[in-house]
Length: 216
Image (cartoon, rainbow, N blue to C red):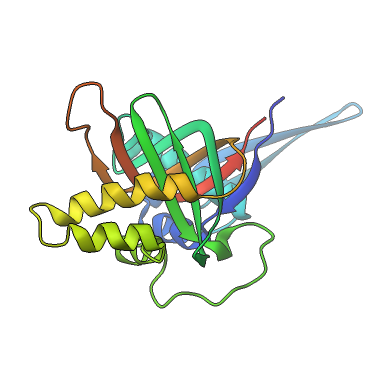
């Protein structure tokens, strides 16, 4: 049996999505059957979006996205995307309140960022004025890297500058993110997706994770 070892779980995203899920769809009836010697008993319980622990709440959100939401993959993302791939991750070198995950498939360069406070077991840190899961705040964190900041400034007045700036930031961030590669599974909110400009090139995908787990 393969276990997920959760590294990052965003309770704020989970709570926000749970609040928007249709309770008539997500509430279900479960039957727990217990056998105690010769006595067979049945116990019924009702699962609701508001209850349960962190992983149970996360599981409800993921099931809902799989069945009713726009959940795609790294190479073909929807509003959300799932992946299982080697990635490097850790506090961003020039902005420790930002945790960053970087990796690539044959088709897509992928970067994900969020608040370091969502790393399980992390010590509480000063929160940024705007959550790191929002695109402007995430990009501001990445631009604390001098090279990313210089790239952003150099293309500021060009056509499609904002899009090109994000693409350059993701590529550079993936080069500087610390740590060894680990096999990570995740579901993330898509923030930006830029298809490859030429055949044989790589797409660029930027997101913010609901969860990231280490999978052996």
